[in-house]
Image (tube, rainbow, N blue to C red):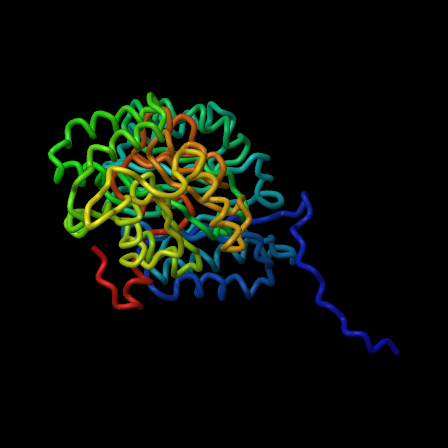
Length: 415
């Protein structure tokens, strides 16, 4: 006698020629409809091949793909029974005969996230037509958020992420909507380190301009900053030129600048949600540790790195100390943070807006241009152009409902 444990037979998809029935139920959503349908189907010994249910404004559509009953004449009885149950439940039913399972999805799968405020029917028509034109098929559509922007995700097969991005990006720019294309796969949820630029990304300000306002040289510093962010000037040279204008400022200005810093809307929500999900979060900045260290403490970040303003006898000297955090330095710090976090570089996300973020965006598993300059948008994996930093969560497939549900459990007031 063989006493070895016997495994259950593996579930199998129905053979290609197996008759199947698509049972569609639609009407007002209420508890018990799904259980009631399958209790009705159970009496005919059918196998479930696929299920999908959608509820929109209180109206549900429930689809069940099941094998046709084996007994002769049982299909007609099943149809009559399901229609009777639906009528008694104040629902409508439709049953369609067919063969086999759903058609196989094409190779090359991507998530196309569309953000609009508002998202119009015309925008949606244009985007979906371009997906089709690029050889893609829309397999599923799912709303991620309804405010502060409308965010909708399309699961697309049959076209590469690169082809979709090339087709959709120009149209998105013309229409003023954001379209982000991310290759499908487990790595989307596996990404466990996010590193962000600070100025004009995590915060709304350019820190050196806040310092410059106290030194009376704001206009000169802003002009050099803008040129550097456009990639027209070497960052290190521009940094030294701008910092030199701050020479002589009393160190007490640091606290004044910290109090002036404004977090980007959604920054706290983004960090709080990522931390709940087990991410480690860091910031890198061409600005100054005098501000980034404070941000690290306020937001509960894991990593922070920036340049350091030199202070002698209680005054800024107009110089910085230590290695310069420039374009190459940000990418180097991303790799260092990933190593410390024990996260492969392929499972990192980088977010930034300026030319000095490009190396970091290209080195990360996913590079996100956030309200970025044109040169950065063109080079990044994907771009977000709405002023809410937590929209980055949608690129990871995290819904607004999930965020708010977690906030309620933790007693957090979402705002």
